[in-house]
Image (tube, rainbow, N blue to C red):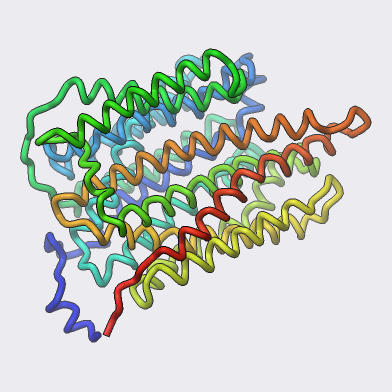
Length: 473
């Protein structure tokens, strides 16, 4: 089908003169938000020493950030019905700048945590709005390319986070991780003020306070429960009670939304098989990337005895490959649909993860880099096409709900994946014999931890065969 024919067949829901410039501020803000999600992992040992806190306490810098994202994300669709897209994005970017400055200047752990949680508010707003705006200002036949840009943010930022943080820590102090966010956020703010229009209609529906409370307790409790499992174990009474309460509350929250005339989140979008399959694959892919990117930096340092600064360098090739593949993978959907890229992408991920199971404490650096690169080819190859496949099933009225739901559960599975990988890491270390060195034991733990992303990849590979691409002329 020619582009002219496509132009006549399907226009964007909202006409914008420069769609890329309208998206640019959000793309930068989303990139910094996702970068912040993993960049601090590599700095946690330093922070424990300098701020005199334990492993369980310092982990709240990651948990607290994801907790706020998990609370704000489900509410973002409601907020877009009360406040303009433009004002929400500008607020989020200003909020992130303030949070980053507080974190950089923090004299204590408590202030640093407050700064991190303020940043989480911004990320929770920006992530779903990127998808919502893209589905409205790009016509369907260009949406794949637009999702490729967003995929670059979602996939590349977590992958490159440990690299950038490692380099910063090798030259400067941990405070500079936050100071370096601010110039990028100021550029994002300029583009948002200059080019971002209001694209969503303000309907100002009645606010259901009970649903907001259920959402906060349910999603927030789920993040807290899986994060607590890192310290207390999945069999702990604290973890089990929190997890059960959160799941019960979420059940009633979703049930209330399904029977509401004006739901905060329209879960009826899951009645559409195309969205259901696409969102499941996106969540599985994100779980793979977050759990593997959590384990790899630690494996470099504790298994292969690589210095922190060098850890950032050896992870750079995989991050660059991730960026390149993310940039063009969206076009694959525009040209041929989602099924082939998804099947091939998850198969490549399985191969890359399998390679890591053959590593030892004496493995060659090039081999681990190669395995990382293979994973970074497969994961982004599947991400943008499946994302676009799911969101293309939605119309203008449900686009905001769909992108919010997809991003919310994406963050939840990110938290779950990190927690499960951590638990398996501990089990693997404990299973090593007393004769093993700490490096050998840690390597064994990493192998246990990698079982989780491998299981997710196999499930995703199987689900990919259920994709039904529309025939094109």
